[in-house]
Image (tube, rainbow, N blue to C red; front, side):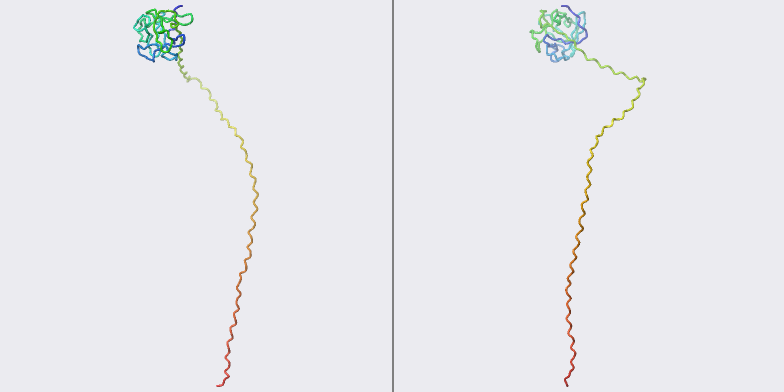
Length: 233
């Protein structure tokens, strides 16, 4: 085993053999917030910036809070738990990385020489972290995976005002839409003229008005001529 120089000023996720990630608990950004294991969601609370501040020793800074991995109260006893704290440049905040043959690493506190260890050797969600003597246990092995930062978009190049403007291409006439031939409705057959109505029936000659026969006037009786009075007086 040899202490290796990891890349400085690079973000890493720090995970156990079963893939759980080292994180600050409950997204707590205050000094004194505990650290724990949780399913790796690749969030900022599970992302750590490794920065070399002394030869072979690094501070481990959480991306979400900006606080560093710290041994509580600067203690050196087995079982002392870890939390995050403002960076003070103390030895209880500095760590070295030792590569194992299986590609995992041990993280060793500069102050105590003890290694990063899982409380109760239980690699489960919510398990807390502590320091302990190096016993080559699986709960003391950690995988470092670099986290790529998204590249900043390049600024768009300014157009050269002196450059010749390309000649404008003549605008293409819009393509004519093919017009489907209209189906021509069959011409209506001219209707034969309906036979003209038969001329109105001639009026039957009016019956001659029956003229009442003129009554022949009875001949007036002839006036009696006065008979000559033959009588003698």
